[in-house]
Length: 206
Image (cartoon, rainbow, N blue to C red; front, side):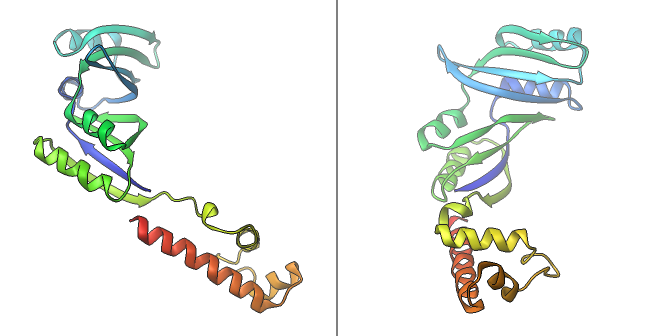
């Protein structure tokens, strides 16, 4: 499945917190729905507790705030926020966010794992709700090892170990064939088929 890095302004309470301290980076360590709200676990290490407490008190959408941990190096707290539209859209579409999410200068930034059909549908939901977003990057996340037979995986791993895919190459097909005690045409055929599977899977998932 493709993995997308997305920037969006989806949670007004967290956006207000971030905008109050634009030079401070917050991390949303986790989030879960509870009693019609979204409970978030937030950590920061670049702000003093009195300043953070004052800011939170000025944001009415942040409720049931609970300090979990506070030292000179970091502050960890929980709070309730209204459930933003994208959270419901992600839950319905099966899109999985990867925590922690970064909160920087009014933007919530994180990675999402979605199928090539789910991602466009999620973007449509954001646009329909009028939510500002930026799609920063999309990359494939298929594990190539799951695509290969045991023999193909064995030969590819051997090729990697001996520098066959380095530039310049540290070994040749003939070298690999000698290690495996087979004809070089056998190694060449196995590598070709393995590489074809990996490339085809990557292309189809983008």
